[in-house]
Image 1: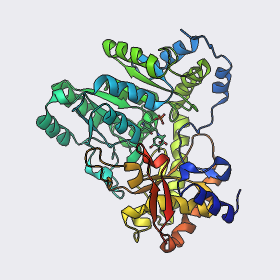
Image 2 (image 1 turned 90 degrees about the horizontal axis):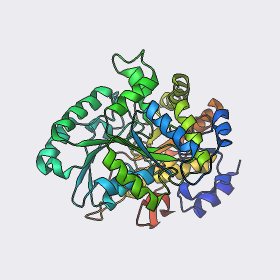
Image 3 (image 1 turned 180 degrees about the horizontal axis):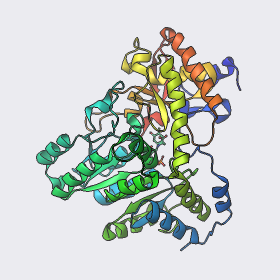
Image 4 (image 1 turned 90 degrees about the vertical axis):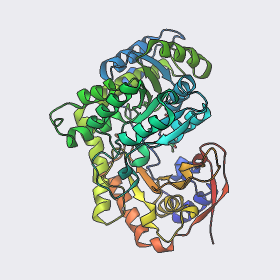
Length: 440
Ligand code: P61
């Protein structure tokens, strides 16, 4: 624990960017659920069985078997984390001038698509951009938007649909199986592939179980498999759902695409049977995948997020509704309406929460959205959010109580919160390293 004076120094030193804080200065760390979950006794036992052979490690085959069994994809290429897989798939499939439609952008995913010469186009339903819409599947694709895009550009210009389950930037919002089926049908007509960002697929499956007609008695495991069966391949950051501190993969059903991927991976990650990971990491991932599709685990995980969300709703704090799968997202436009978006309201609010209690959160608004690659102007996203992300199997409800109290305290004093100006802006993924000063 730290004093307010210590936190004041720390946040100024960090340029009002929670990514630049030292973890020793943080009390409850809700920056991300990425790589921050606790591994189980079984996973740790698996770490002891690392086969650290350069080629053909036993652990690779365990991982491959787990992916085939639980997700159903045929070929896999391990990578050090999700963006390693995004780099490879983008390089293989996207040509300069291509259009990549997707259900809301994700920072690293869009950047790799752009670096490969593509342009991302958002085809998520409009409700996803409205924090107060209670649509049960705000991750859904607007199929009419997609079809008119295909008509304008032609199917040849669209290498694949970038389809995320549990849409992160929308607030961890799910897509329904009905919508994925509709998308599959439409893409089949035009011969377009679907590449699934399956980083939080099990959390999405939980919402399908709870909200979609006909799924209440289905297991998470079977829902996950059904989702994957409707897509052609996937990128995975196993640091989330799959409960590991490091790891990811690219999965594909098409053999020739797999062959290209397994050739590229040796340039950027490592041999195709380790992809930048130690044997022990692959073993932990194989076991983590198995644990991630357990109904009881996923209910407890999403249940903890709901616990915090309901506390904030009871206190009339403006958050994204419905409550998502991996965190609570504060609506900064409603929380600090006196700040203009160019004064970085969510960035400022995240700094203020840290100052109040040492709780670390993350900006998900104008800073994260970055600049338009063609015009170089800031994007002004509808959603200006602060994400309180819950790691899996780490915190207790008592920690959630502390967090809720702190957010309420900051809410009470919200009128005093000042805006920020950006004083350092890196070229790529600026939110990680940008620095700010308080506007006097
Ligand atoms: C996160 F602020 N997410 O949510 P990698 N797809 C999806 C992700 O959520 C994801 C990746 C791909 C992080 C870490 C992070 O703007 C940020 O294993 C849906 O991180 O390479 C990662 O997977 C990339 C935080 C990433 C960010 C980018 O906290």
